[in-house]
Image (cartoon, rainbow, N blue to C red; front, side, top):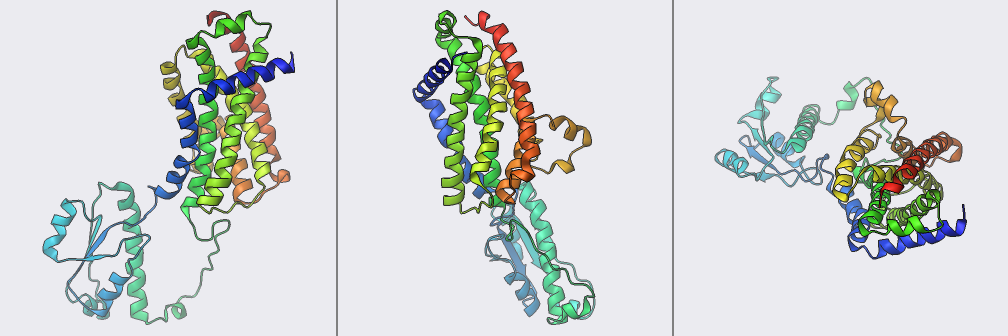
Length: 373
């Protein structure tokens, strides 16, 4: 093995990438606009949900309930008549329509149990599910506060002191931005290395490599370090400029330690990209293969839902995936400010998994490189 060969081969890959505008646009999009949209769109959260109110009571209590709905969870309520309610929902103008019946306040003060009708546009499934619970809780709180005239705390034997650590305001954008960076590191690492290998075959340059005094190890390592370096630099830019700067997401831990963990993760995922590139015979095949690999890696790694919520068999299988340990490592460092003394097991796991994937990719690459021409 010659280090110079590896450096020259890696430089060749970077120059080839710079001449590929499609890949450059993909990298720029994945670590800029995609991060911003993932953090600000947040389709799983209730954000500016349109609501209309039919107030047939016109009492202080009904006015109080109407005033409880305001941005950012809801838009300012549209005060409408009962005749407008159905037509507005049919036109998709309102997700929620709240109908407060006549003499509602009188019935509440009399100890009766009056019903408030809530119509929900369930075609907007996420908002409908989350918003119904929000509205029920908000109305219950307003009625209780109205009845007890601010003395609710005196009748409650236990008070709950809630302290949210690491994200005091419970901003989902803080979670979405960092998780999107983590997911895109995995996606781009696999795509760039696999595409670099397939590009050699499609452009016919694999024949040049076969007659050069270089080994399969040098060819493969050149692709790994060059594409890994591109993703590492792009992720550092995204974390500092987009996440910390544009989105103002606080980073608690060491960015340098996170980038070191990213490099370990890239060692594993770029090796996986080479392995997939030896299986696929063309870019369309590679794209189909990516869907089978990337979706489980992202959905079951813990970046979308906690691993503890998954079946035990899934947890055991995903323990051997590099994305699982990278998500644990990244969340501990960036959210909780953990140091190396806390995340060293994840570093060790990434090293072991990366070495296994590198060995498997090298064996596959050696056996298939002779048939690539």
